[in-house]
Image 1 (cartoon, rainbow, N blue to C red):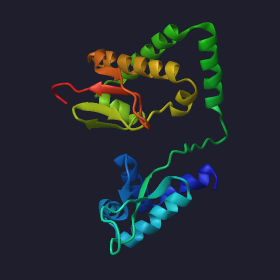
Image 2: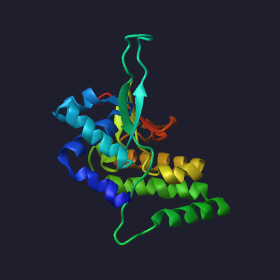
Image 3: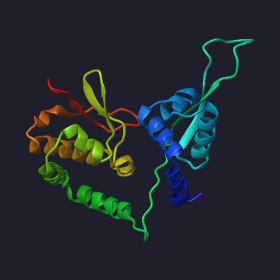
Length: 210
């Protein structure tokens, strides 16, 4: 199935609602809780969730039963957002290839500090439109959420590039977020690196108003 065909699965409102709930949870989601969140029956939810797995948008697994042995029943089927990255461009474009070339140039020239300054300036430009920093990050795909007084982010918008150039991309990501905070009149020191598998490496400490 092509990326375009896979993404077309989200044209169905129920399927789109189920995907959004599973993706937003950040962990394993059972059929029952997904059905309740989408306001549909468990049977209908199971059908749509499995279609999303077939499309490569979700992954499926089984949650181990707490009770072992005879009578414990079958393991519950659970779903999580797929690790695969899908994109569609009409006509086809390949900005990722150019980004990789530019990252190579930065490393060859030893331009990491200049790259961080450029990223911070980009954050300042993003802040020119004003708004709340967390909502601005949400609009740009970071998927922020609060955990124990810290704003973490489920998604790294630069994930593919960060896999090949982790030090460069994470330092630039941090600088961008610091520039965003500075431009919005916030303390840039709220942004810090705190890597966690499967999430963005940048976190934000909360303010008293958060």
